[in-house]
Image (cartoon, rainbow, N blue to C red; front, side, top):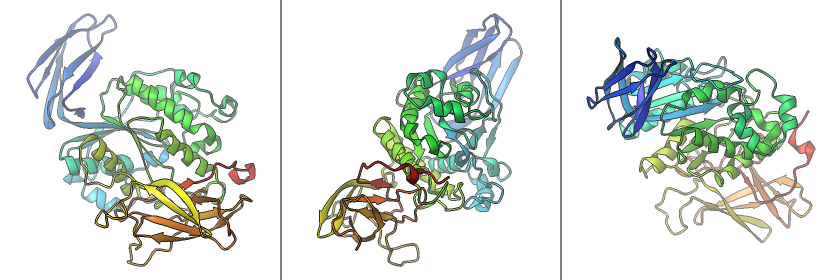
Length: 461
């Protein structure tokens, strides 16, 4: 396994009731003693040192048990539904980018370890879970969470220290199942929708928190990565409220209010219909949550989603984008492309909407790579896609767009809209939006209006 370096971690287990449990650590030869309770349960805080290993821990109440091949490094919790669960080897008929090469090269990264929590749905909180720590080699990596593994591999490559990944995920699950009972009681949400829709074993409220999160609470970790939301596209309106509360409660349960929480924008996919907007509103809620979740970040996916497959194959780029957030914000690595451009403002001039953005270079700094790219991967000039524009009638038309590259701005216009008021970008279930920076970060989806979305625009039955 991997234990979090340079901190105090918990060790726990069962022994003879009331016995003295002795614990010896090989990394500093410290010996700790604690008393087992009447139930035999015991827990002891111990201090870890700098990254390294392999080490061992000897635990004894008379008969010693030796835990070996232990590394000290960085530990992250990887959670969510099927796009987090999707393994390096892919799902049936649904490939994962660079799968064969990743498995072939896995032995190059022996300091990456993953513990996958077995599926477990419970009505009351559990203290134990099933799973096994495995290290990176060609025989094991194929079953690792692809997003988790690529995230951990990127950290390992930059930091050159061990990385431990605890993956707790279940395909097709909604956020309510990953929340505690007290969290759901604390917030105002559509409880009728929950009662009518989340009735299966893996979707009922709290059941996955109880069975697959609560058992991990003693395990000290650096932070969380999260890829979930597809299952909530029909109650998108409550997603921000639930995500904000879930993160607050998880941090409270781990007794660490500043644990980083980095998550993935739900990727484009057709769902009910490509032109419907329910998922656009869920993504909008994901971005709004950033303002209410401190120490958080989101990575874009506009460039990797597929029309016909909900499990987009390019988990490599998603895992690395998550790692870039952690590297820049938690490990002091400033040379990575951590933040994607986001909408800042719009002005109307001569029948055009002129858009400005955050996280881009200043117009006078042409050496800064934080700028929009006007070439695609084949060195062809990009035709900007994904924009819509509307006038006072609130009717949106597909728009043409032109990159004003010297200003890092984009002009949007359409013959049907002589007096534009509002612009939307990638604001559908699926869109071929293609704006990227020079370093490959996609422009985040947005809209400049706050108009109501009509019910027939949300879903197509």
